[in-house]
Image 1 (cartoon, one colour):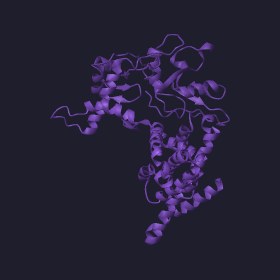
Image 2 (cartoon, rainbow, N blue to C red):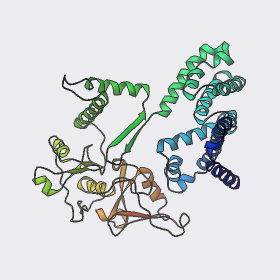
Image 3 (cartoon, rainbow, N blue to C red):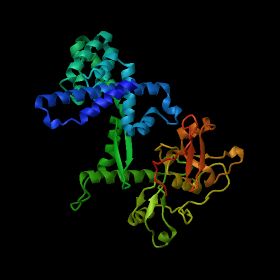
Image 4 (cartoon, one colour):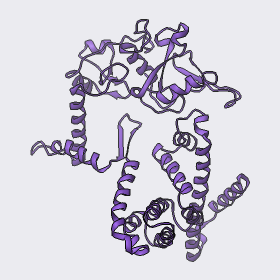
Length: 418
């Protein structure tokens, strides 16, 4: 397969150098159709490979928490895109093979394959394999005329075409299946932009969408005739208000022994001058005005920093990492320190580099922040991976020889560090 793909890559590279301006219009159109068809056929090959990786457990063997996370690192995808590939690879592998064949033949595109696979599964459950085969033929034909969004709408009445005698009863089953898909596809993605802002994207199920609207709609109305905010800005501010209210209730789960809170770091000199600029525990920076605004409604938690900006040992000699010591650890590591992991600090545990039971102390020099998966992974594979603090005081991980013969130390580059 590798040799065949290499040959295909060479042919495509040759096509990329073709002077398309010299092609007559009919050849240009034919070339576009062929390139599109080839793209879908390659997508089928990639999904087959991903399914095989997932089945072998390659990702977890190499230290990733899932195949999606491994793909994100390997192919430089967003985590949402990687998860969609893993999900679709599973659907095409375990579902009706006709969908996979249609994609491999270039008759449908990837987005249409998801719709067709879901619909064929629903038809098979409601009316049996014969109706499912008919549905596949009808949907592939429709895919030649309609995009995935319209195909999804049309598919809700597919039984009218392939099994009209049970169509009404199955309509309810289709609604139930749609509800299950909504539950499966729900997600929220938080992406840090280069300037420190956060991009919020996602899909909410119907119930959560109703809750969000009920919470923010009363707060999105203009505050008066002089309110110049756009509707999007008002929704942003409403979400901020809801978060502030939730934090004030004191009913949110604890993180590492501390109540849910915002931690702002600023210099002592800035503090004595009525606060200077500051940084959140996530590594994002705030203007002096924002720090002052937060300080009006928050307790100020001191953390003494060394001249190089490194938090000193803030904790007593105890097993649990809580309070000031945990805050110092969050400031240093910025999140899970394992290479390639993007889990934020509040999802993480403090791991003793030299275990407490082996006379390791509870100090900043002997703890590292790890998410639940990598904490378990390090304990299960303690003889494979080694973690240590480098000369600059930040953690680095030495991979096992079977993964990297040179055993070059690795670091996490996802988190901004103070």
